[in-house]
Length: 105
Image 1 (cartoon, helix red, strand yellow):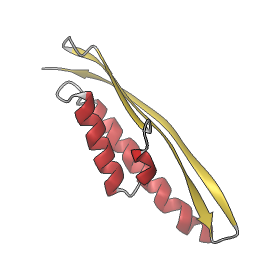
Image 2 (spheres, rainbow, N blue to C red; image 1 turned 30 degrees about the vertical axis):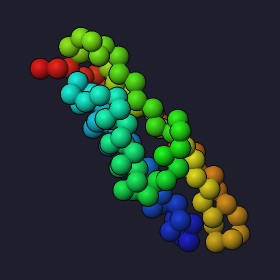
Image 3 (cartoon, rainbow, N blue to C red; image 1 turned 180 degrees about the vertical axis):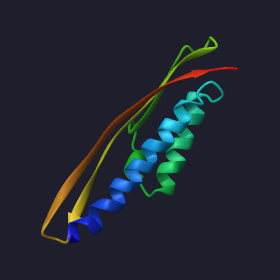
Image 4 (cartoon, rainbow, N blue to C red; image 1 turned 45 degrees about the vertical axis):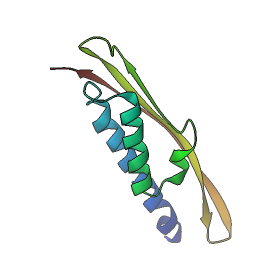
């Protein structure tokens, strides 16, 4: 039970960041990759996921940007060492990819 107090808040924060990636990826028709990346980093900061600010931790790729539709892929790759009350530590690796179609209307 004590482990849950350390792991669950971090798991929840990562889940919220993945949900944000899902939402933003579907809006790629109206936002540039730089804007999407900045919004993802802002959300990571709000969720206190400082490791998501490391270079390469958040990658945004938009295909079909010159047309009226395409795909947006947002990749999240980072890790955090979670101290388990000085007894041991757990390294939590996040390696998630969200890919969504988008279209300009």
